[in-house]
Length: 488
Image (cartoon, rainbow, N blue to C red; front, top):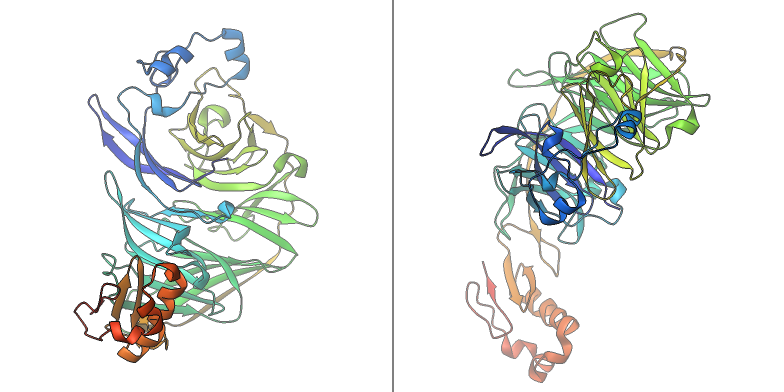
């Protein structure tokens, strides 16, 4: 099964005929694609014979009754579209627990962060610069060091929840390029903010900084949702937090802030019900719109997004965006007053993107990109209007806090493979794919022959096994023997 971790707009791509929209797709098997899309069924539908021959597509002659009853216009794989070529931007080695892989694209659509990358055999978080036809790795760090991470609304900045610093948020400036191999990495200024009074587990950035820059929430029995802002003035920066602590046992999933920063959307689970919640942050009263979903119809949450609503389905709305939640049972759309559901297809959806109010693109478990198109006359469009009851408002306590930010700088050094001393200028010993760095000749003579013996014992010269010091002379920058190379 191939799961789509990310499906988001990337920008536009010029073609021979026109400029077309482009989606970026990150798959759980490690492949990252750039996919041009169009909004005409004639561009996508094929007969099986044409698909095998790769011919120019044309509209399938569907049975009109079947087509009308389904109220769905679903295309085939976009890879066969006329004059539209899918580009593989790159590949990463994914962690075995593919459900834990996360991806996010920056606000300016120029950077991509992926959590769950195997880098040098270590589960890591990697940041890539997006090129027209490729990706460039610019930052990587261990996944074990952070609880969660996202892009800052400002470019070239990351926000992270350090695992070793409970209740703190770190703001890290991204480097322009990756350091050279065995070069020490100067860590730019890191800003720390927050207070160690609660255990934040999730962080997301806001698409606009009008009200807040980012939001966090906890997994406590009575969770807390917090909104953060950092003052821009030079010198001593200050952080400001507005928190809402729920007063009943509950669990929050997939919280998202809309593009204007005015509304929250999330899945709220209590002991009595499961609901899709929209909270209006501008209102002081009647701000909550929690619509209950029967647990047997909901399933497990896969992803959630603020997207353009299906206007043909729900009619004109007072907002430009609706809150969508994709689960193992279907796609749910909360438009602020009602909930619509599109049941899962025969081959289940794993991610989606809604645009123009009449299209939903989705990727199924076979890695195929499909399109649901809704036009005038398809009133229901395959969607089901749920008779959702409004859940009672959730009581919460609101508080505001502020404090000074702390800053730090440092250097990420390699360590001696023998004594573990930090090294500014490591001395590298290499042979037949093995590499280690040392601080001195004595550490190299003590550790390196043993390492070589463990990895390639049967191919070693007997003299090397018996008297390794006879064949190794510590000469930084020059060759030591056929088995040793040590240099700055």
